[in-house]
Image (cartoon, rainbow, N blue to C red):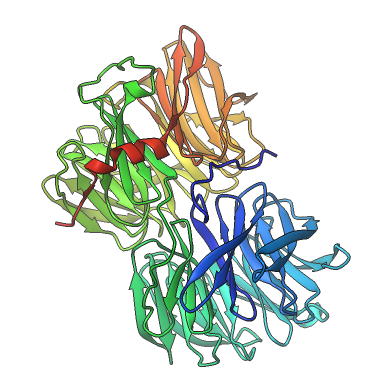
Length: 637
């Protein structure tokens, strides 16, 4: 397993902050990140200072301090391991004391039992395991879920609560598992927390509702908090009963007596995780450091965080490449800069300079090129029309949930926008952006959309389906994957971005597979990575179809399909490996693609005379630094 190897540019993180956890005394904060590290921050009165860094091979999903207040910290990683560390924040010292491994997939969360020696971990392998930390022994399975096990919390009395994507909550004492309770709520549950006295727990649910339950999982109350999913939840540590909630509308709010007493949204906030201590709220962030807010009023502190430039989305038009970044920036550069100075077919823009447009503070998740200009969507739920070359203020419309995917219909006027909630909205983009219709297409986030023909698109989503979609709404499933679909693509494409005759549909999924075929036919199954496939695109020259797939194992794979696509499995070749996961791909024309990685690089791949040519990577950090003088803020209209 290749470890993450990002360039260090800050004392904090090099990628977004996935999780935050205060120490029992509240004088230290652990923040986990996509950069594969946990940073220990010494916390004062609304101040933070980084004092130590702990490293895993892959992204870190969570951290949990031992209640024994002896400085032990457990960390959960996508490298399938649990690290146990001894941390002295006052001295700025940390050392690894144990590494626990038994899960077969990403470890999502963990929590210590009150004895300070046993630990429960939950994983995307659907299980919750019990560990004896001093000996390193796995003591057995606490429970299983039918989907990814997302979170775990332990009460002051030792009750273990687990929640999952299957919509179920499980609660029991680990020494009396036979007397536990299990209840289904009909909606994915992503976060959970106990009140300090253990009398009740809060569940953060995908329908935007926080549900309060008893230790027997009886429903005590329901509090709608968002039109998007509720993602994280924490009770105030002061015993006041206040509940802090983070949701996927990029907001944090405080519930007091069931009513909202404060709310803050936007900025770099990524409420994937929240925690409280000593009158402070720590929140995950799309910057290099967690965000600190005052519990009273959620007043922000000017913390040490800076922008991070991980690329999430790519689009192309007129010889220019458009890159959507974590920092809410949209970077444009000439494709010829990736091709050693050679201009690609269809290039119309002679300006060689890179430019950067600030769309907002939250990440740009998707980019597409429409007749009326460039269209970008954000984690905050906005769809924006921008003109990066003219630096023009453009239109903006909110869809109320993260807009995870965009695709422009042939002709360039109609845009399909997929949301975290499983909806696909049809937008007309001109001087303004108009939502003409909205359809519930999938059970879970729509991760990717691509147009197959002038009146038919394909969508891929968390429910594992690759589905047809027309102007009248969702159609039948073309095929299914065994896990969430990260990307769909149609190709080969002409320079204008339209599919050429004989084009195929390709899909990349978390089941490690790429499937390729045509609507109505059985797809081929392409094998390569032993980890999740994140991105896909298709090239070809008429005789050979070349499928490119990008993986969370950091590698770009290629499959060459001669004489069409058949329903057989083939092993892909590794074209190159980056220093972080491959995040996005886009075809410039039928024989040229651009591949982005979360190591903050982009590079071109060409199918030339029967061979694949990989060009040198271009550093996005350098491009952004050179372009900041031309940065503009795109406002709403």
